[in-house]
Image 1 (spheres, rainbow, N blue to C red):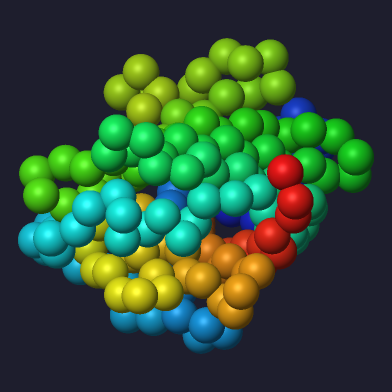
Image 2 (image 1 turned 180 degrees about the horizontal axis):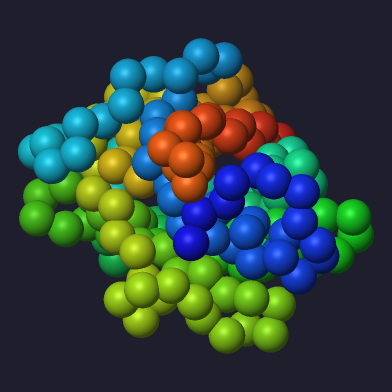
Length: 179
């Protein structure tokens, strides 16, 4: 399933938003898109310490609603994350994810859940995205990229693949919140 941007009813809209979040395939650099990582490219050497700056709780805008994200500090080569998407005061979906050291680099694993906590998606609901590029302010995974903006900001760009073949970047802009 892919979100096509057409007007849809509440249930259809929720399903479309859930499908949309699975289609994470782009990069971010400040206010402009960075070069997209090349699918199938070799992952750079990296450890979880390279992205420890991501830890914290943030709130922001994305997909036409409120987005809340919490990323735990590194523990044993992993960082756990939790995401909530809220629209019109209603929870639309959850994500649980982990950044993990794998094969000398980093891997992002994401699992999506409806508001009833039933997982959805292929491969038992788990999607994997290898790291494709890393710099001091950004981690660019094949399916999701995050970039630090100042002391308290985080920007994420998601590439949306429409049914008709069009591609569109969706920006999430987060601000750090106290835990």
